Image (cartoon, protein in one colour):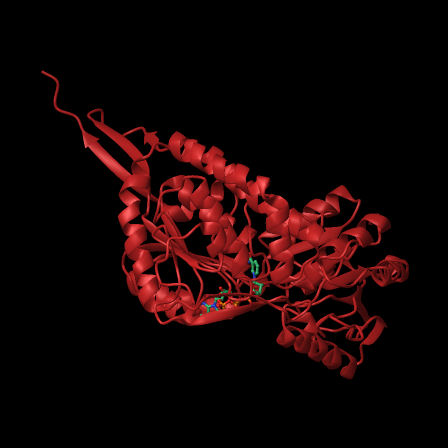
Length: 494
Ligand code: NAP
């Protein structure tokens, strides 16, 4: 094993964590094995860091903060722009790395790299526009100034299903505002995050401004949230973990943003364009093999279009190609792990046991030589009801459950009947209905005839138990900025 604190070429040490500009192993030498979910091959070993290294990262980020915040917005903007250019230069290399550790098809991985880079590009532009305000005072001899200042050291904890975009969606706005950051990458997919860290160094982001940790999630997050120097944390992951972090953030009243789980409804009204609705359903449901927080989870279809929609969707789903994401033309890769496979099977068994009918798929893809047993056949299941787990818990797999409905009011009521409120979709060509339903859905993101709404400049986040705060565009800056009010009394005139 290479020595601790070795400062050899970053390209040779992509399997180390970055703390204060140094590529580090764990102090006790512990590692996490990273495996390709499609083949089970061992891809890399990354350090299993803990509380001590997390505190060292906070030391590094604190030391780097005064210099980084002192740069002008334009200076930070130029550095971030270089970071963006480097990500796009290495788009294919990063996409391959992502497919190998996460499993998503290469074309999707490439799309995610461009999307991830988009947050860096947007933040580079926005770094120049962190404006304050002046407000008319209540008396003639006063001036009211509002300053927006970086909060200081910040932290991010990211999930495995978007190994690049969930990192840049947090890191880029933090850096743009003048904050420094410690990113704890997901253990299943740390390599993309470490490769991004390597490009951040190459872009000239100073040591300590970006720190990327791999390791024990609980130990690292406890250390970060016990340290009063960490002033904000952004988390993307499950609602369960998000709630525990929110409780821990109370200790030092650390600002917190939560991007949590979802259970997205998708409504197809009788007047929808059938082709658009089917293509949209396939796009949102089967992307990343159904392992996204904004995947459609419940598909409500109005009676008048139900039979045609169910048939067209079934034809489209049967044609999806499953396999190793590195193979040309593959549209559905493996699930991330065996627990993910088991959950999908449990949801289907529960639904069938309560009266649902599998129309397409519903089983594992038969084992193939050189591939792991981690591929699930794209599935359409009919006759699902609210009592079934599939219609209340995230399945995180390629399964589309259909529910028939009669009226708009029923559909909206069923769509909102959940503790989640991240994303919802609906398809209609009636403009009045479009506005009514968009207003009535209790979700942070609504796709109206649009199944792929995520873009860097729009606010991304959920209502209810799906989260707190928003990432994306100018909204992302709020977490990383303090608002300071300066009331200035002028000297009396002579
Ligand atoms: P997860 O288990 O909550 O893990 C997310 C991150 O939290 C990982 O870095 C994980 O580290 C860490 N973590 C796990 N247990 C922790 C603990 N006790 N304390 C502190 N950190 C902990 O979620 P996941 O399975 O990776 O991701 C899937 C979930 O994320 C789904 O619910 C999905 O809907 C949600 N998600 C939400 C959004 C959004 O924008 N709203 C986007 C993508 C995903 P390790 O990897 O080391 O365990």
